[in-house]
Length: 526
Image 1 (cartoon, rainbow, N blue to C red):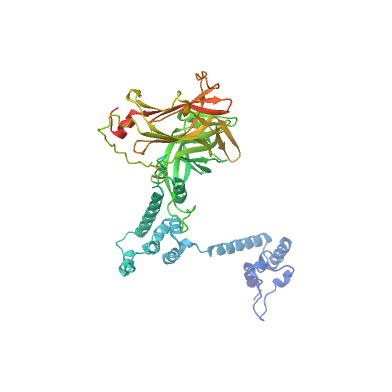
Image 2: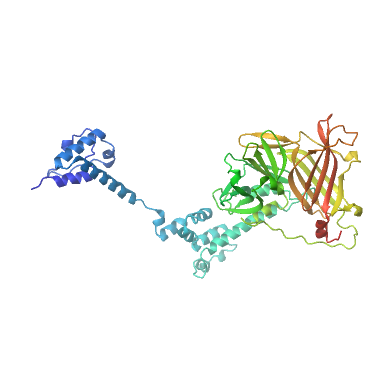
């Protein structure tokens, strides 16, 4: 005997009981007549149309009609809803499940940068995005043939030949693209400044190549914290890069700091670097962070921060309470592009050693004809900039392994130079800024007699007060000195504060060059 229970269960599985608001439940429980198929409301109207009381009453009536307990009825209703939702989620198509032919067709519409990014998804995408046919078309569009006859059927067949390894045309495109970019940068670096001996268009070359600098803080567990440059300022012989952040890693967990230059592997069609594209990293310098005070020298402080100087122009500002305030690097222009682009993520750029040019005629070869260009500045404020030519050293001035070159003498008042403006090292973070007195950045470029850079550096320095008063009677103010020492030589400078003019005056400047460096450079034996 037909009772209609099967029809009721079928309507329950289809969600028929969740009809539109206001429809009596008794009408929904009536079996269909043989007049026509039942009319089921749309799914979107059935989902949330009935509120909780109406739905519970419908459940109670259905439970009484079928002779099933109400808890079991609700459990069956919940299981059916979960089963329906799982079926809907399985209908989603994943792009990774597409056939290789379809993916290759999609990849054929992408540009070079998008293809390189797609290859980083997984191993399958890497192989598909390295297809020789796709990259051969990109290569042909970017580097068109010089003759029309160059593109023939044999070239098309060579792209699909089985003898060619996967990704051959991809490598060819990348290598030629990088070579073309380097050739343009080299052309910009050819004009030389006669005073500094450095390229005139270094700033333009940096912007054209998309070069940036990052610092990588490594903790003891090997985790890397990469911070992109926050501020940059260009000077005559150097560039000052600053990094500051509100979320520096804990100082106690850090082990080392790396300074790297990053450049985009490929430039966009409009010659603008793409931030989401692939980048190349070149290691410039690396510093140990385990014992900060042992590997760095404190050069100054104010009410908020303390300045610590590492080698090669790196400066770290530490909050007096705890933590890093900022990191700053002063990078000299000499071979800066090469050091920032031609190295690798783990190896520094190694320049070719200079071959010594021998001279048997001049008995004082390598002791004269030097030219010094010095610049003292801080965050766009230039305190002193000068060029000194025809520097020489006598043989009796060679002592303790150094050649002495006097640039500014005590005795010659006409050589004394003032520092313009209020001397101080300007710093800033995302929330604070300040200035530390008697600290600045000194850029030095020393050229040999052939106008070739012999000694180049850019470092933060501090002026230290002399413990004794000045012996110069014409200056009635306190005396200061600053010095810098590295493997090539030493710089020693003395200054006097003139109270009437409210400025510092350089009264003595001496260079000391290592005899080992001079002998290796000129092939001499001093």
